[in-house]
Length: 96
Ligand SMILES: [Zn+2]
Image (cartoon, rainbow, N blue to C red; front, side):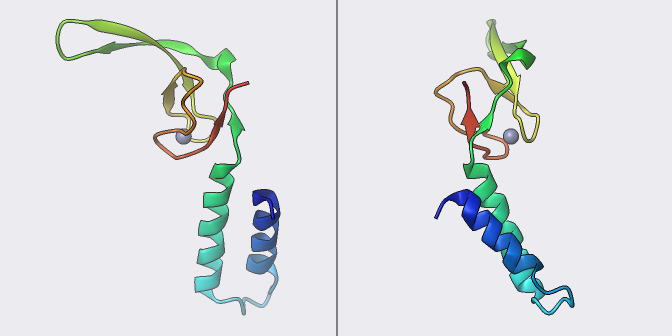
């Protein structure tokens, strides 16, 4: 079963009873599982939105990093194709 299929079935489980007879706990559990699975599906990083960020190292050195916004949470990620996940929200990243 792929993550996409699991998400589809979890949404069906969560939404199947319009009368609300699916318990609140089941709904919350499905929402959590969907959120976690969606983060495992790589999202493309938009390199066109890259910007240069200067960071002070605490001594006397200022370094410049190329950064791109996370496609989900928008926090800056240092542009480095070996970075697999956003360190802020955990989203899996795709660079090409
Ligand atoms: Zn993020």
